[in-house]
Length: 330
Ligand SMILES: C[S@@+](CC[C@H](N)C(=O)[O-])C[C@H]1O[C@@H](n2cnc3c(N)ncnc32)[C@H](O)[C@@H]1O
Image (cartoon, rainbow, N blue to C red; front, top):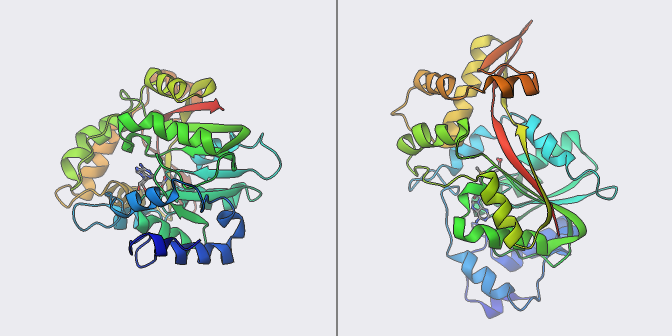
């Protein structure tokens, strides 16, 4: 396919048009190029739409947080407890499942999978070109596409994950994103959707800290279990089940101070928090907000508060969070 002949020069990735991207992928990861619906009647329109979209996860310039987010991700595995549980949900699929991570950023889930589920193939997908550029530079198979308008063929992947950012998809578009996820699934594949409930500590953190103290703000509606079930049902999903999942941040360091400093760096970078909040203020607000209920702490046998453990130069600080996870089928 030579899309550039049909579509006026548009950018697919920073400094890369779609045809060149496709050639690179075909050479490096032929299985990824085989998933793309290059001749689909809608592909050209989807690519043209994509060329005019830019979100806050590109660069920090112009009120974004992409650069600092990617810097924070160099500390790989901070969310591996939650990510492993999400990956586990696809492990009943045939031998070597192919999982599409629709809000994949620059590939954190793929990095966790490579160390904990090396038999999985994860295709990292994201709207932000800089995220995909960064993933590919780390040799992580990746594709730029919108959750609402996937470029993949029908029935092409074993599992679809929409996680760590579902609230970023416009509430009016979420049903469409779920329907797209179902479309690209094989017949017995599963769709897993993850977010944080409106009454969770994470939603409070976004509302009280991230929204007033980051250039992009964070004016997004989080997902309740009822809304999630309703939208998935309307999108055509079957056998929907919803559960809560323990999904902490765990940062390590060679001293208690180093571990806590790492957590502060992670929080500042990931959420793009400005200098108006000092490191101490970020950690103080995190200690106030990230507190589990006694019932939640008992259920997962964890401390309800931010806690530190360790000895002999290896210390771990744990920030507890609880996520909402839906599993559904085609
Ligand atoms: C909070 S980040 C999470 C990235 C990665 N999953 C992680 O946990 O590090 C959310 C990601 O969703 C992407 N995103 C937001 N809306 C999207 C959409 N409509 N379609 C595809 N990606 C989208 C953003 O570009 C961003 O990289």
